[in-house]
Amino acid sequence: MRKPIDTVMVEQRATSFTRRSIKTESKQQGLRLALSMIDLTTLEGKDSPEKVRSLCHKAITPWECEIEPPLPSVAAVCVYPSLVQVAKRALEGSGVSVASVATGFPSGQYPIAVRLNDVVEAVKSGADEIDMVINRGAFLSGCTEEVADEIAQVRVACGKSHLKIILETGELETLENVRIASDLAIRAAASTGPINDGEVFIKTSTGKVSPAATMPVTLVMLEAIRDYYEETGVRIGMKPAGGIKTAKQALHYLVMVKETLGDDWLTPNLFRFGASSLTNDVLRQIRKQQTGSYAATYDFSEA
Amino acid sequence: MSRLTIAKTYKMYIGGKFVRTESGRSIVVENTKGEIAAHTCHGSRKDFRGAVESASNAFTSWSGITGYLRGQILYRMAEMLEGRREEFAAAILTTQKITPAKAKKEVDASVDCLVRFAGWTDKYHQVLGCSNAVASDYYNFTVPQPQGVVAVIAPPAPSLLGLVALLGAPLCTGNTIVAVGSDLNPVPTAILGEICQTSDIPAGVINLITGKQSELFEQIASHRQVAGIYSAALSKKNRILVEASSADSLKRVRFNTFSDEDWYDGDTVASPWNIEPFVEMKTIWHPSAC
Image (cartoon, rainbow over all chains, first blue to last red; front, side):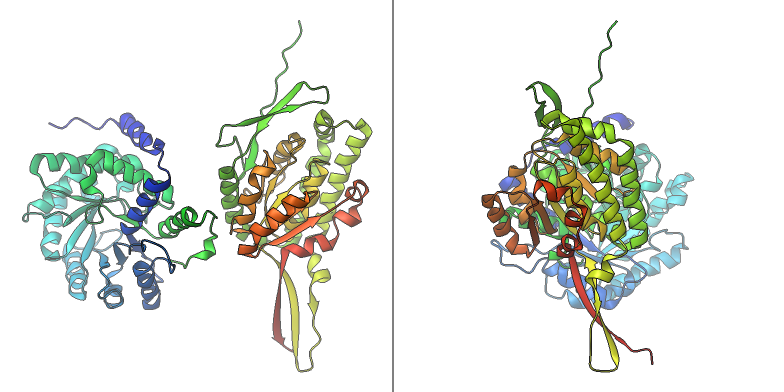
């Protein structure tokens, strides 16, 4: 039997990760790692093919500069299903993945048939990764079996594409619920077949609900991943999304991952940041380390 | 029974909040008799960078409101300063061996200076901009626009008037300010934050740092988000240092030398020619009405 979540201790522990001193070389390394873990995201009603193309360009070459060693590309570009094809074409041969939100993102309040079709269409368009939302309404009314069943169906619909399960923790009210939803999501995904490293992620938020990703919430989810790994040897990925805007925050998250799950998870294959404005702040800090002078916001292209 | 006086904790004013320096350092301010008069924050380069972020975030709204409204807000600042003349005069007298009458005169001149800049907010366009002569059937206008974040390096003295006069000029057009107060007497700078806080100045529009100016010159000049630097009474060595480090980001750098008399002459310190260095000129054509 799992111990109940101690909210006060979780918050204390999460705060403790922000007190580590990361300077010079380790900072430079951390910043580059963070950059390579970003899912560069645009999820707005006004998204256009041209905006997605420009975002893809940014994803491949975050900053046009002479820098040694060269900067990594980001991990993926995350868009709505109707723009997957555009992104797929723009990213061809770059090694950057295309992630698509699906299942009636962000609310998930659509009939299951519509949500599954959403996934199938996104995969057909070429999405390498599917970011699904769970049915929070069902979860909060206690219908956990329904939620688990839907997640399993979505994983089957994903086929070979990787699956990220968005819990939308901002709507789950308590850390205990976050842990229950994490365990539920992982087990539901595992029920449909074996999971290779990085094939299934759990993700905090859609970015449309406040609060989005917070350190305590992420810590609880990381602990769920750790416990599942200790039990089964399977590595589930983690993606905090929404509200991570500064390089400093990103480094705090990396410290938390390292100290909770270990070095194995410090790879884009198992850890991602869902963000857009984070990229430029990371670049700004990298530039600062490189040149000594502080960059202006307009020194970098808009994401 | 004698009462224990409550000494005030002087803080810096950054992003609309009264904060201590992140460095945890402080400066002992001695009065004219060599006794400890106050402890003020010894601001760091990191504090400066944080202040630039705040100022940068505040720029869109401050430059976007009408000049008329900006004028009302600056006038409100003058009103607040007027109401606390005694406190500021006492703060000036802490470290400077001048007569109480002179200290009061400095506060009065600071109030008047703010009123002058409040007046300029909706008038500088007319003076600095123009309708250009063209030889065809359209109009051509040049309009001044604020630049962004302007850093102010206040002179050692007058500690209040010098700060107010230097920050007022870029502020009135819609620039946002990060000011490093007088080294000689940081107390008036610290109290000016309270004036900003109570006078409808939006958070981040004026940021006030106290500390050792010489530690910050290079950081101020090399920070690319800073669009301009306004200073007075810098030594030649420091002027060269600031100018050289500013070159990379093409900053507008303005060093003024005001004599003691000049500081008290509103026509000199609040001249539109001190506003002009911190505006960008935009020239546009417009089809004629006919």
